[in-house]
Image 1 (cartoon, rainbow, N blue to C red):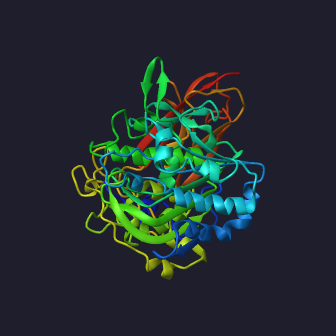
Image 2 (image 1 turned 60 degrees about the vertical axis):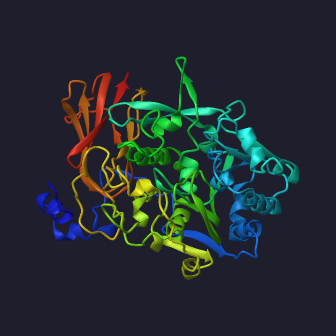
Length: 502
């Protein structure tokens, strides 16, 4: 049954004063602490346009100029990791290098860095699914960069001898267990200043791919050996091994949620620190590998990757009108659901009204818009409007002044603690909401009996923390043992488990 926001508040006994309180008319939490958004109220962006008579290299240095002071301060005592997109290509393509970050865009980026600091170490790296990244470096012209510039190294991040991997846990599609995902530590280690640079492309699973996916799908290693068996963490991000073509009924929908999980893992650590969109030449159609060229001659940059991808959505012809469910006849910027959810959770600004141009303008950007042809998966069967758990979730909110997309089955991320043994007197329970929900949080014993109700509130999207003092509803300290954390959202829930010791 569908219930809109007013009906929910009315049934909960909440009056009109509460209805209008807070941001967008949502109730501010008193029992949960909302973590500070990673982005400020507005996100600065720079935009430049060029022409065929210009150069891609100069265009990139021009778009970065407003960021000189910020980059100069940010790279001090760090190693720069330039995350390029070296996606595997099919040898039969007319121009296989169209799928990659163009080497001249990287030249422009290094020109800019070296104009600030001549000695800071620079790694150009990727965690690509290619079998032989060294050959790709050569074929794409990247090896020349190591002789043209001092202190530049090419690195396959799948090889962990120099930059090791670290383990993170994400929820599996059934939301009852987690799976271990090894990611390159460069994306969560503060000694690296990460820059995402890529071109705009359509995508067979995610509709479009830009600076965010360039980070979030690069972090997981390409292969990993567990108990003698080699698996692909990148395939696991799609749901399971073998789901990577965008043609399985569940595939692209699971990837949306997993990208949201990965963003909550990586972005709070500060990566990427800078995002650059090289839209000199983009890819339309059967991207991210088999598409065709679109010449646009422009570039955008920001310290907020979501803001850059919002400009990209506009540049490739997506409507500024939010649609829910997805309307395949009128592609919208909200079709990229994980970007919407990340923005709702405070991981950046994917809202055009929260973007401030410090170079260029929205009107100048609009003159460079091209309407990209999308992948056949967008309109095929299964299509992006299909819900991967078997039907759209009930609509809880009616129209709001905030983005609140509920399709493709958004779920909260209850930060996994399944492997933790707790010895402290207080337990922090962290969760991230991709959309607004009526939320309940409780502690249950191993038999399923509730022993402590922590809170029951209506929360906007965001990242939250609640604290349990290891006491039950009567104020008595609970004994050592295993306990279940249950996060209810709407009519559904997800559970975690912790072990308490004295």
